[in-house]
Length: 471
Image 1: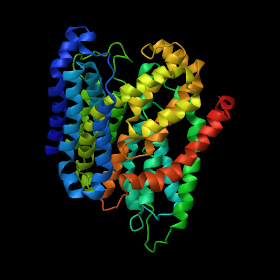
Image 2 (image 1 turned 90 degrees about the vertical axis):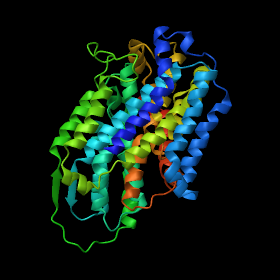
Image 3 (image 1 turned 45 degrees about the vertical axis):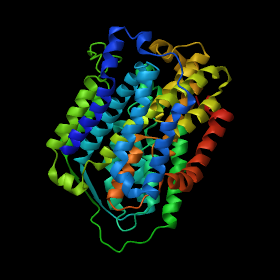
Image 4 (image 1 turned 120 degrees about the vertical axis):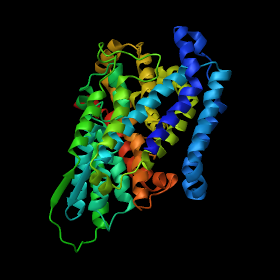
């Protein structure tokens, strides 16, 4: 329960920082008094760059210092950016938007993490390359139903236990690639960028109708690579297995269903849902945070014991991403400005690579939204008009597909590309698995494995325009 109080303290930091400005913006009707039209100077990207460098080098070169002080460092760097916007730019709207996105982000991740932590799945069968591949395929599919975070938290521990005695870092990396990222590209529930598109006017089933071919192609290639790597490193187990599957925690399955349904509790989707403005959260977030408490309070204790459940992984994500969300505000604004200026020159291929590269290091949800705005602007449409977003998705599907595919797929390129990546890493390290460093992950795995696959997808679907032929 102390960890839950830590979450409240963390959110209080942000609330206290900009609370007065939220009400100032509301009182002024959200006008210019609360928002500066001046772009931040380029040097304000430095806190973001410094935080990324410390995330990359801390665990490797000054592990004890980093482990003890990373919450303070993240909050301090985030405060530098927040205070600059409040005092110098007189821009509180950007911070309010960022706070709202962060609360939604951490509410979803925390609720899925805690709810799935009370579900215990034990698979007592022999680990083989074929079974591991099928397991990753299954996780990739259900990530579209309970989200990449839900699927990751539900399946990472069983995956570790299935491969007990022969677990290697590459097992976890491919789990992150497939279950925590690429798998969730078919529905708005699957990954946060797609949900933002849904809120803006993209039809719920547009994604699966227009992305399935690239999703299937990418996943098949990725799992084939995994199968051959796993077969090359496979060692025969001498144990005996019952081939039984044990399941505990039915109550928490109900909580997972509540989380998935609560995603749609939004005034943008249903007009009867009341807005809680000027508060930077809504009924959806209240439901999710309630699930955090209730699913932990009433969870099967044996399920928690079997999962070695603790709050450290979500605590690490919460503290690091509060700094990331705050410090990346200047970077996103500068990117959005350039994207809109260059909108006429951006082709589907350029949208693919621009969205993808930036989604690797920035949070992929706001990156998706910025490039969606630029793509709509290219054709004289407004991202804030659901009707125009809906019309755009069917009039120019290749543009929306390139942004959607890149935002979700490239989130797997780094530990910070998508929220579940860091959580899976933290859980595995607590389980004694030596995970690669930030740069080790990129240089040893994502660059040599993912980048060639993403290049092939670009060449076939957006350069040769196979996408246009299929759709």
